Length: 337
Image (cartoon, helix red, strand yellow):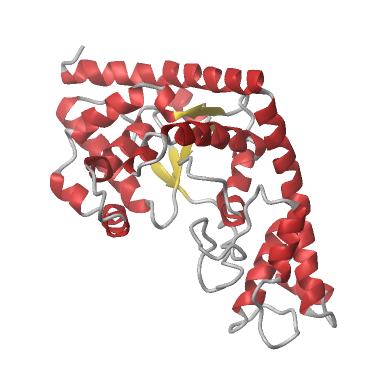
């Protein structure tokens, strides 16, 4: 093994992920993914960004977009990301993303882009605004990942195709112009809780749900959380048990397990002989207690404008320093510098 190989093997691996600034996280987002992000800081170099350039594919009021990007950044910190341990930044504050996105779009075959399922899905949802940004979205996403020589990208089922696209583009660039990019791999953590709607427990909990009682947001206050859980759909039985046909109860048990760390047998024993009313209140209480520190930290961050401005600025400066190195190398290879 060469000294270079040894150094590469011993370095901390890089994990990168981004979120769009389109409103607050749901309990499903938090328990399914975000809660685990702060623990990854202990073992990986973690890069998390607010993907405001990606959000441009759907129109939003400029001031609202600016505010939401700032709030999303604050929410990442409130959820436990430490800007001293992790790199946290807003995408558009690092110009290299847009430049790399264009460069990689020129290596993205039209046929590959037309096959992207998210383009098809979003086009169906917004037929009045099928724009070029939506079509070339995967090239920008590839740029986001490759700029930082990322090792791992946390991916769900709906993102695997984008990661494969990124690897294909990176391989094509390395083959045509010369070696620049590390090929990222998917990061598949221990599966987070799959949280369902409180009113339609066969469907995923979603921020776009029109039923206000169906979704818990991590910034909901304690009274709202308890009220939503008390109105959660269960069944005509009264036994707290995890089994087929009890979708509503299964969902509540999944949430309770994710927050408390208890298994299903322990939860069944804890609530033996008790009704659904007691169980719903207990689930609502542990969730409210879990989310209270996040809500309080978030309010504290937004109130401290000087600190938040400095954290956003420093994150952008650190990200730019890393991204510009990769961008400069890629531009030289392409004959742009």
